[in-house]
Image 1: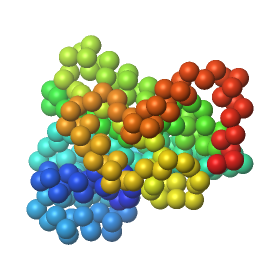
Image 2 (image 1 turned 180 degrees about the vertical axis):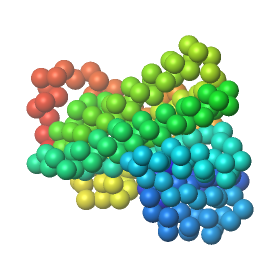
Image 3 (image 1 turned 90 degrees about the horizontal axis):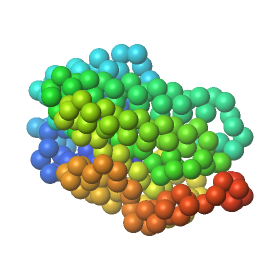
Image 4 (image 1 turned 135 degrees about the vertical axis):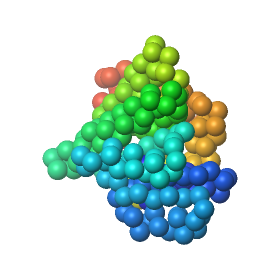
Length: 236
């Protein structure tokens, strides 16, 4: 889900190159058609807007066309630097990263419950670690995703559903999502995709990409609130 650009597209391409049968979904069908043309025997495309009420039904349609689903990968999301707190941007982020995320991950969870097992992979972000002043709703929705996935993991374990959950938390990846932002330590999307596929195969519970961001997140967690609020992140 979200295979038309950025991390989602790179992960889909890598899986296809490895011989996986992949259902690619996004709002922009023309970008999906490019993948299907390159891998005609392996890729199946479906137009899905996670903010639409019929998105879960369209996911079921894609699953039927594939003949089943073993792994659901959610890479659909939006975000902006929004220091002016433009309300439209904030609400759009919440609708896509909060409501849309919940709709699709819930649909995948229910499918795997029926199938007695499966694997849900969601690409969240290190932005969920702390509240980031330049991108309030993005940071907040990523924290929501982290907690939601952790909750589903506990639910699956308690009910013995056999559903594995993997929360991928990349640092700042050089994709269209942050192309106009001046973030440090930008990661290459192809390198990130390779690490994500490794985490999927190993069924990691939480994977922070990469090692530099694992160190950074560890430091972030130790910072007291009074110090965090003084960090000049809005100048990035």
